[in-house]
Every structure is written in C-alpha cells, then in structure tokens.
Length: 336
Ligand SMILES: [Zn+2]
Image (tube, rainbow, N blue to C red; front, top):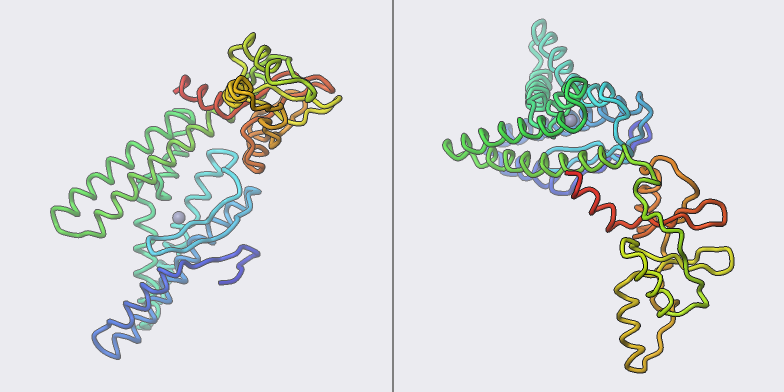
C-alpha cells in the first residue's frame, strides 16, 4: 500500500474483500456509508497499532521489515528479537496504549461536542486496545506478561508460563464460544493456542541457541579429505569418527565443501556395481566457513541466509570441526 516512516505497509486482499463485503451487504444506503467510514477508521487504527510497535522497536534499534494487515489482525514483522525484556515489554505495550490514548482523546472530544466521527474513532480503538491487552500470549498483553515475568523466572520459564496462561485463556474463549455459538470466539481461541505454542517453541529454541558458542556446538574433529581423494578414503575417516556429521573436502588450502555419510555409502555400493562416483559427485558445496569461536547465533543466521546444512569451523588454514543442522537439532532435543 505504501510506506510509513520508511516501513512498507501491506494489506492482505482478504481484509479489503471483508471490509468491502461488509459495506456491500449493509441493509441501507445510510448504513452503507457509515459502514464504509467505520471500516476505514478500523483499517487506519490497525495500521496505527502496528506502526506503534514498529516505532517503539526502532527506539530500541530494531528495524521493521514490514507491517502486514490481514483479516484476523496484523503484525509488524521485526528484523530481530527485542534485545532486553524491558524493550520487549514496551514494544508490545506501545500499540494497545496508542489505541487506548486515541479512544481516550475521542471520548474527551465527544464529551464537549457530539461529533459522530469521534464516536466511530473511539469504540474500535477502545476495543483494539483492550483485547490486545488480554494476557494471552502471543497477543500484546501476553508478550508484556512474558517480559514482566522474565526478571523473576528467566527467559525459559517466563515463556513457558506466558504460553500456558495464554492457552488457558484461549481454552476459556473456545468453550465460551461453543456454549454461546459464537464462531469468531472459537476461531480466535484456536488461533491463540496454535500461534502461542509455535511462538513458545521458537523462543525456547532461540533462547537455547543464544546461550551457545560455536565451539560447544561443533563436532570437533580436525579431519578433512582432499578433493583428489576417493569415496573409500572419506568413508574410512568417517568410520574412525562415528560422531562426525560431515567431512570437509579441501582443495589446496581451501575448504570447497563437505561430504555426508549416507551419500558416500550409496556411492560405495554403486562403485561395487561398477558405477564410478567421485567425491565431487556427492559433495555438498553449499557450506558456510567460520573463523574461530564466538556466539553461535550470527553463524546460524548466516547458515539460514544461505540455506546451508553445514558450517566448517576454521582456525586460520586449519579445519577445527563442523556444525551440522542435524547435530543442532539433536542437541536441542536432549536439552529440552
Ligand atoms: Zn499488537
């Protein structure tokens, strides 16, 4: 739709269709005009809500990739996580507080002048502000709760508790929605359970990874095979190191890729049938090389960007070890 403060704003076509349908199916011309006006106010209020998140995030040095509005709400997609619990709290709080402030000013104006526009501005903003303050993670209120619990419980337990409380409230909403035949309440409840659980997992994974260092996460076997070598040699080295997830392949002083166990075994059995396969045929060239130790997260980001399964850790010209996605997943499983 355009940019606000340099942030791209995108509106899902479903939301536009929904608002148009509401206007179109209004029972009279007068109501149609009013519905159109209220729809526009709601749309603007939603944008202001997400913009408040984005500007609060910017205050803490985090950029927003885009603001996205869809039929079930919106999201400001941040480029990274809040650096501290305090930042997380205020980034979450800024938006519902903006809606409540707008509602408050509108009610104040209404107190002095009976202007229909301010009534249309007041109620949607009051509703938006209050519903988002419900402490049902991942609603804003739930994020605020998580951030507030963080100081007492630490990142892992606060996330677990916020998600648990969110699921509890969502279950109440689902039961109430079923009992009173309000499908919207049931849908919102189910969405909160699903989104809350997904986000709980993501933050627990992020929490675990953010405490780790490169050297703790690697298979520290300083072995490699020359690109001039053959499948049998690579298998012999991997056979001697059963925990090694990938074997770096070097060409001169450079690492040009890695080979994995399964393709090598397949290549060896193909060779037994007379099909010649070299290391270069089974080599994964899409790898990341990393120099020295340090926090794991920047390396993971690099692997994510290039969609690499494996990083080779170097110390100058020497191979120190490898980090594979499979190994990281295994570590995560045994930690949780
Ligand atoms: Zn929000």
